[in-house]
Length: 324
Length: 289
Figure 1 (tube, chains in turn blue, purple):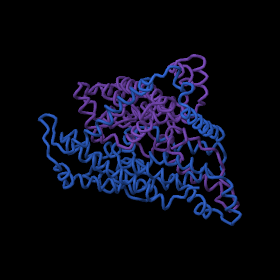
Figure 2 (cartoon, chains in turn purple, brown):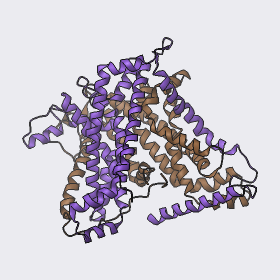
Figure 3 (tube, one colour):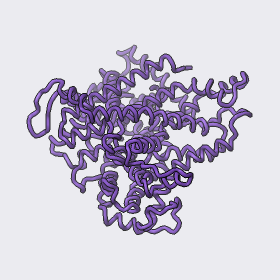
Figure 4 (cartoon, chains in turn yellow, brown):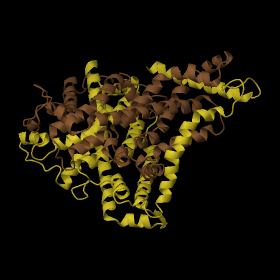
């Protein structure tokens, strides 16, 4: 497999050269796009995607930002209100709690997700019978193919206070029934556990890929220097894996910031506002209270947070990520 | 972002050392993790195969010995499950095919055709991937409503067809195919369209299948957009129908709801068994160095 991808890279390099040469003698033979030049031809290929994205992505982004400065309930005409939506949203206790919930959720869920994924990936990639490695990899990957809504449906039964399997298992070791879905702390824990259960497999896949690209020689050199066991991982694996860790954490954080399906199905945001998330308040203010301007303002704030975190992570990476 | 499709993790045994954790200890830990991952799914399957009265039986059983299909009959009575499956299949299938066609065309243009502003346009396409879908949903909803498509399956299908990620994936795939093919085809007198249609598109089938499988998996499981875009039950997709069957207070009969959940998982399971490699490659595509 690695040779296949090497060839691919090489062909690309060769092609790059060919293209440059092609550009150099412009008057020469016709380019790759055919005998007669058809300058419109690429646009025929691009039209479906570009027009579609223009209508369904680019315009909505612009409209969303614009809408944040209007008050509009669809029924009456929109009225310009300046920064009022932002001011109201920032002062709204439900919105505030929801953003705090989301940030707490992201911190705990992403830490758990990355920790589990990294630990399991290291264990799977070390010496292991081949069929077991295949089995474990498939097992950890499996929840990714399920729908978050379906998963939340059956998890809601498993975490039932009286009849749920989780409390039954806990009772076997003498722990009294935990009121999972009826207390703020319990609900938050369930949302986090269910989310991590379904999503750690994605980070796991990324770490498996990262581990496979660490040259065996590095470990040989390290063990010649006397590094063994967990020290080997701290001094060799972690630094060499840091580019993967960066990508995995950026993706995990961005995804977790948008959490919706699990809290919506498991708790509807409750009890109280204890598991309400940022995307849930966008959904509720737009489609339940018809405050589309406020919903857009919350969306703009969420997008800015996502962009800021992404930028910060890549800046931090310059200091901490070790590139070979 | 230069690697095409991330190469599947090579089965590499990290350097063994004598004082390493014992293999047995690792197998035990990994097995515990596997049980925690697969246990809830097995419980779902075995509970769906028990009579509704025994749904909350404790100790629970994780293996469906003595299966009972009453709940599966019930799910067809309590829920228009055939309608839901048809809706989900239509939405998912049309989105997948639509994404494969548009992504192949656009990816080919970005990889193999030269035009003014190619780099800039491609950057814009990539940049749109950073904006979360939940942020654009309000204007998309209004647009759909404005053209009279609200509460139709088209409201779910049309906005999902243009795909930045699929375009990116296909561009990388086409860049990995040898360039001399186009030259050879041109010498043979093939038009640019024919070069694409008869030479490059067939070679790009593995890449296209990744785009299709990813689209299928994502949209089959999708909950947020159907929740917003559809109102009447006849336009619901599977996840939405199942959540409404469970009910706000979780009052639906457990084994019946779980039977529905198991039925909804079957296509995903098929993808898992036959397209796991493609799915893994697709999910991790673009994250390589």
